[in-house]
Image: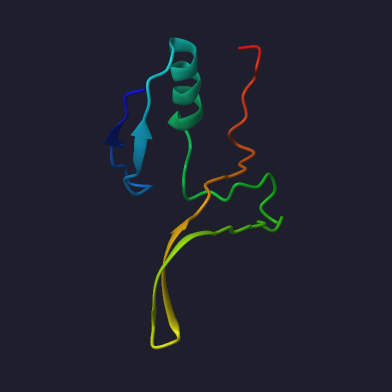
Length: 94
C-alpha cells in the first residue's frame, strides 16, 4: 500500500492537519470524504455539551535509552491512537 503525507487546506476555524493518505476503493473513499468533510476538530466529541468528556491515555515503553543523573529517563515509547467520536457515525447500508 503506497502512503504519502498531505496537508488539508487551511480554514478559519481549524488549524492545518497532517494525515497519512492511503489507497482505497471508491466506496471507502466516498465514506471517508463524507465523514471528514464536515468534521470540526474544535468540537467536543460528546452528544450533549453538559456531559463530561472521558479521556484515557495509554503509553507503551519500547526501549530505555539512558538514565541521566538517576532521575531523568530517556526512552523510546509508543502512544496508541484511538478516538471514540459519536459524530463519525455512518449508515452501514449506504
